[in-house]
Length: 227
Image 1: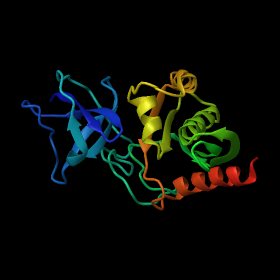
Image 2: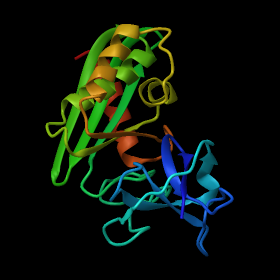
Image 3: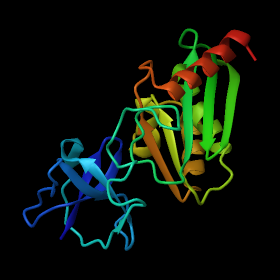
């Protein structure tokens, strides 16, 4: 059965489709998706309603079921709930992935700026609260991602960055042109290219997602302390 390119929230995926190019959904409305068109690509499940076709030719992919079976406890496209990560919106988090939660804060725009980062890697949890000095909110959001990626020591592992900044995601994973902060964006893009499997997930800010709230508190505390 063929596969075709689709958009799933903030990521491009390949979805299983029929000969007419329509996603093949099960009784619960879920569709098989993979993130790479490669033999043995790990198989996930996404809600058909969350898939947007991108067009282009179909391909054949010999996908492998995710650990625990397709649509396991961390199936693609699922959101909400609170697991061991302590936050919602866990979209397509591969098993064993390193999670990097980030946020930036600014008192005035521009004004005193700070960042907050929480890194989760199995039993390891690392937090960072850093004052940046004068800056803009966008600089703080981008710098938080940069600092978070710097905390990752194993670049071969899957890494998922969670941020509430559509601006940062657009620049770093969707090909947006940097009209400002070009040097900072170029530096982070170069860092991103060093990772074997790096994904960005947009989360809702100030929506009660535990780790997003925690990074916000770390960022605003850095601004308050000016340290």
